[in-house]
Length: 253
Ligand SMILES: NC(=O)c1ccc[n+]([C@@H]2O[C@H](COP(=O)([O-])OP(=O)(O)OC[C@H]3O[C@@H](n4cnc5c(N)ncnc54)[C@H](O)[C@@H]3O)[C@@H](O)[C@H]2O)c1
Image (cartoon, rainbow, N blue to C red; front, top):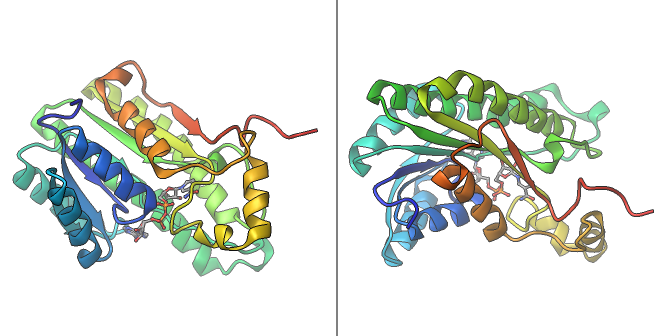
């Protein structure tokens, strides 16, 4: 049980990766603040964790709202008894050629994926520093944090920013014993990507872009997140752990 007596806040915790990772944290002893836009969905995930014998507390949270984020951090720390780890995971993406992308949609993707991660990371950093406690932050970047894909200009930009932000936060927070890392998933089957899997042609394409010939599964990302958040990664900070079945390793000739 790597997370006994630890409190973890997860954003986007009712989506595919956030939900799975919340279950994994709870199964290893953590108390989990399950946060997302919809309190009913967050409550359902927290209830499922509790039914399995875990500890979880639902919160309604829009990661672009800095004031609400500070409130939720304080309330989560209070109810869990300790708040040590943040999984800054909420994210959205567009599918639209750059030349047709509305500036408002660009702004929305950047606001959630970049500013939202910054707000969450800064809020837990302030909390940990005020308490004089060590901690860990894991941000969700992407394989598209190190390369681009067509029709995903804002998303690709936002994930490259998350990789850079992870390094910058690591620099500022290392003196406070707070490690900051990112996980970079390939294509993982979740509500975000489900439409790829509904289309047989697209499904084949998705398999082929990964050297391993398949998409990933949420537990394969959750395990990487738990590693980065745990003491096993005690000398890792500022890294981006790409977990992508070889998507970014190269192309077939
Ligand atoms: N699934 C993949 O293939 C994949 C690949 C690389 C990176 N990612 C990243 O992983 C993260 C999770 O993705 P997922 O696949 O679980 O997607 P998902 O759509 O299943 O879950 C995303 C969650 O984020 C929440 N969210 C959206 N805007 C929010 C906001 N303003 N405030 C709070 N919560 C908000 C949604 O309600 C949703 O529950 C995202 O950052 C995504 O970019 C996913």
